[in-house]
Length: 126
Image (cartoon, rainbow, N blue to C red; front, side):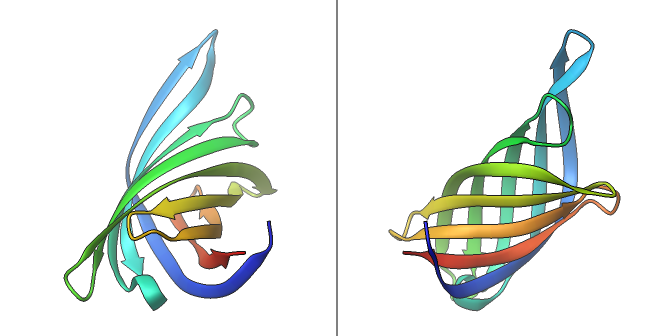
């Protein structure tokens, strides 16, 4: 998948985390985020990310978000991708999301686990 033009950025703060596990290991984390969007998706977003990771470093995720746009409209997004350890309690995130306004976007970002922040960029998918 090639990345097209950058269409926005996001900066979100984790508001809660629910952990699930078995066999003495955490296997899933449900993380709620809220924060600001810029660019073509300018506004505010609420998101829930479900991260599935056996080692706490590399894994897969699914995300569901509701974006409250500056113009008063609402755009929902559903996506999935991968998390990869970037060292130092940080993950890089790469994935795709389909939106209720008919777009398909690529997402590239970083989760700072210590500071509980998720920030990154959105691109057109080509």
